[in-house]
Image (cartoon, rainbow, N blue to C red):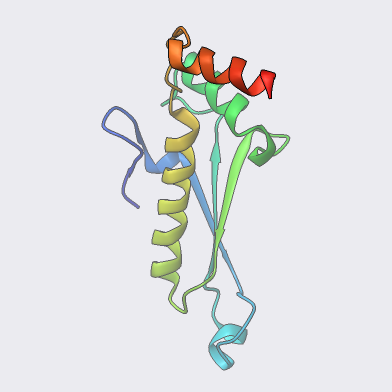
Length: 127
């Protein structure tokens, strides 16, 4: 498996991603019953050597409800009939999840209310 690119500065090596396959449910006939196409992709945030302390703390805060007790992010994919397509979808979902978890929110700039907005507020109070 190849490394997973999260953004320009962060690439996860394949040894930090744990992949397992199982039988998928839903439509698909005999293929679903015989072939293990469902993908479960796990990434341990707490034990990753690719993440610094700040990134690890940010991910723990942002993805708190998505983390297991062991500190792993688990992603499932079973929408396709082929194992390879499900694996690629799971990798993309994990990358997107980590990308949004690592985004630093913009700081709000404090601004003063305009004269027009003050006038509007006072006019609304008088009515």
